[in-house]
Length: 288
Image (cartoon, rainbow, N blue to C red; front, top):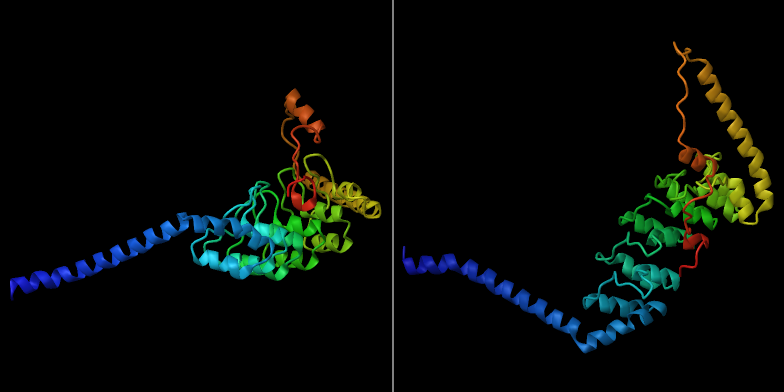
């Protein structure tokens, strides 16, 4: 075989790959130059104008040119969540469909796009976001808390159907049922009770669902919940007592361990200590 031909034939694939790589690199550098250009900077300045005015086509064009869909507003709000705030639903749909968008991005208050959709009662969009990877359950406040806080029945049913934890505790122990009571929506309260919500739960401040109803100015609901809580607590205590009496007595009685003074004081004052500001979805702070 001709050695010259052999060298050329073996090198050709390498040369082809190199030329392709060089072309791709040049394209990348060109795109980078465009992104860094004053014209692009001007387009970036228009981004939030497009979001606020629900200009989906313009946002789509910027994304096609390489704009970051995860850019944040001045207060740290991800673009997809800012679209919800602005009721810019066409822009939201464009951002939600973009594969580069972080669907579980958190704003400075620890909220996610799915939580905002739950507050807004956007059930179909929430379901679509879950299908694309948005988390239904998470540590702390959850989308179900948010749906319950605004009486969004359809959204809450959908979330429960997606295995949302009905007794999920927020950082201060507040449950979706407490948020439902706070909203004053009896149908939401009943929905969560039917799904297995524990009516006897209290948060770290010692507040029950009845207390939350009263806090939300729903005095009639609070009056209904109080005897329900009392009955449930009595039934639970009776069950625990029956279990205790069915056990064998210990062979030798041991003296109780002394509880540390600090722990005792903390247990007797559940409402004191570090307080949490809550979440913007239930209007417990001023975050925009």
